Length: 338
Picture 1 (cartoon, rainbow, N blue to C red):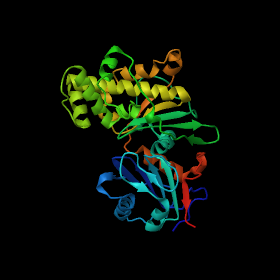
Picture 2: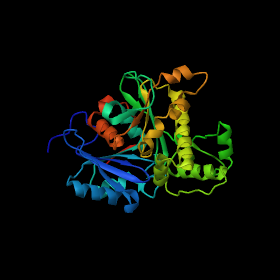
Picture 3: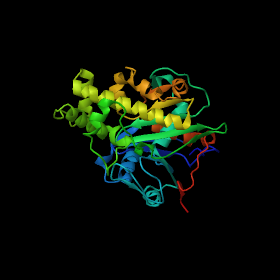
Picture 4: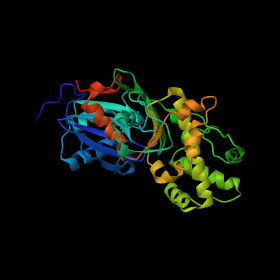
């Protein structure tokens, strides 16, 4: 076996995984730091993470020495639970079960942030104007099962990803129509968070409220069917998706105000590509830049949609292969046997 590169983060080969509330994607980084093809599974099909990882290992025929995982959850202590699914990650039992020497756990959107310097023109679609400044901070936000957000700080000494739970910030109405819709929205413990509305489940909550505001019964209970109907011109579905895209633009702009990411804002997640035409109407971009008194500043920041299927794996692969290009604090997130 070829010895790992001197700068390797963990012993190679390594299994890398991007694990959300619905899908888990696995790949392997070989002894030379090359990222292999992705393998996708549905989280609900496996009782736990070990079973899913064993299946991926068996399918690839590769015995990893370490694992680097990106998880949609808060990383605290030696037990990490998915926010929107039943899997719980315990690094020490995981190492014992799979014969690993090292386990590293990152946040799922932190992993997507790591991929941003590696994206090519084929991996993204522009949404409006703006020009990316090389080496400058970038951010990524994305609706899926939940709503994630992360920044990749350009420090001049390597890229530093942030992590947090920005999807749980409060969000509210601005227009008269939105105020009418808001009266019919379901709440979570009295709150309306960004994730509560800008996610797969949120799209359906918006649909129920839009229908109720018009005195109608909701016609859809599946976000994919709702998206297809919107693309086909169904008026209630269309209004719902337009509102969803507007809220996402507004939220992305709020996050951008915190970091002023002159390298760009990237939209990730599985929902956006399904409704891509709605991002080109101008509503998303207008909501993003409508931040008086800083409209001109916001208009200079480019916005892009990631259309690559596995950006989290791309980010993990880049980090594993060349950790010297990143400045990541792994305190409390890197477990080593012995």
